[in-house]
Length: 294
Image (cartoon, rainbow, N blue to C red):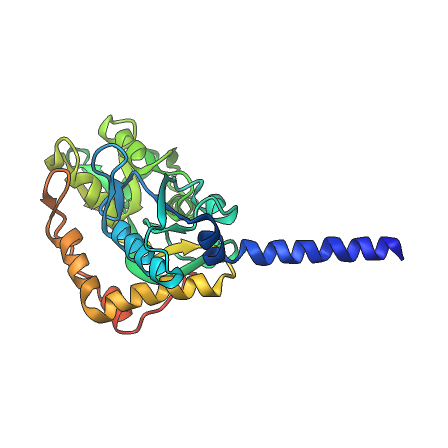
């Protein structure tokens, strides 16, 4: 009888702890702090423009969510902590509660949906290749028996490995710890191409020492949505994040932000990416969805 009571108490404690872990708003209210993740080289979504100064389209989405949380909790002086994350550690840091929200360049897919939740989608992209113009690389067949870079912890690395096996290309796929590291492999001729979301490749070229040396080539292997990532099974916090982003979409502010970061000159070199909004994103503004890629 005593053992049963002890087990019941343990189970109750576990249930309460689980409930608390999923209540991000309560955690933020109690601590007086919200912790946002940022990326160091995901141009133009989230990247550094000077030491410890993250900027970008996704950073502005994060900031809008912070304002909504301040209002929701009636905490105008809420402290905002910023933490850099990589493709490899971003999901574990959401899962263990170290960060509350990650708005970067994270693909919303079903596999990740088992571990974290995603807000409504805010961008659509596909895997393509960054290469030096001098390399004459134009598509995936040109990569046979060559060294190709991607980034650790990304869907792109998985897509390339699968494609390599299916097409029997015998590529040597090497992984950088972040996008800047993978780009350096191409810049220094240790890899002939870098396989990544096309928008991130355009961003890296715009900020390269010699942008004219590089180009984005190849067919898009798949189209995937980006979305902000937050703790799983936290409906109240997800509603705040979703309502914020949908509000920006409905008011026209989202399109202004898009023009600022994708069509206009951006820091640090004040070079525009000149990437018009995709049909998929226009559809998503009309009918916001958090539908994942498969």
